[in-house]
Structure formats: C-alpha cells, structure tokens
Image 1 (cartoon, rainbow, N blue to C red):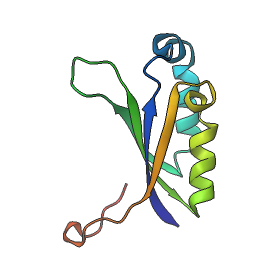
Image 2: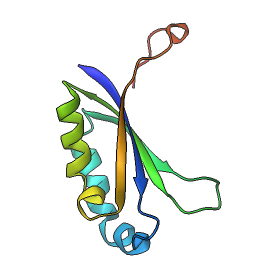
Image 3: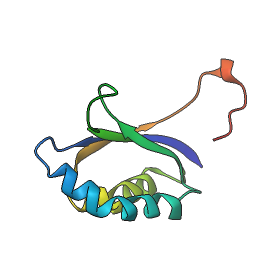
Length: 101
C-alpha cells in the first residue's frame, strides 16, 4: 500500500452552487463508502470568506491506477465540477515518527 495525495481544482465557470447543492450528499456518501482508501478529504479555498475552489485527499491504495479510479469515480469529478487533479506519491518527513490517519 502506498499513500497518495490528490489535489483537485474546480472549473471556475462550473455551476458550482448547482453541482455542490444537488450532489454534495452523493459526494460525501462516496467518501464514506471509501473510508478505508480515502483517509482524509476536504475542500480548499484561498481564504475563509471565499467559496471552495478545489479539494485535497490523502489516499492509501495499492497503486496509482487505483488512486486514479477513486478520483475519477467521485460524483464531483463525473459531473464536471472538477477541472482536473494532480496525484502525488506522498512520504512523510522522518521527524514525525509514526502517523496514523
């Protein structure tokens, strides 16, 4: 198993309100369904008073293909809210010792 970080970027012109409003429960259900592989997830924004413009996940999966599949099956991705994402293999700095997510 390897840990990956996925950083999602939303389409600035996407109907964010519509997609988020109508499909947030589907998105959150998807995250809950995959808790064993998507260890942490949350929205990203430039400041506390701005709307979300993306998201970040920490995944623990067998390989990159599994990480891609998880990212692309998310309702937010399938419905076009996400412009795209970057996947990075993640290794923690040794000074943090054992970290459980």
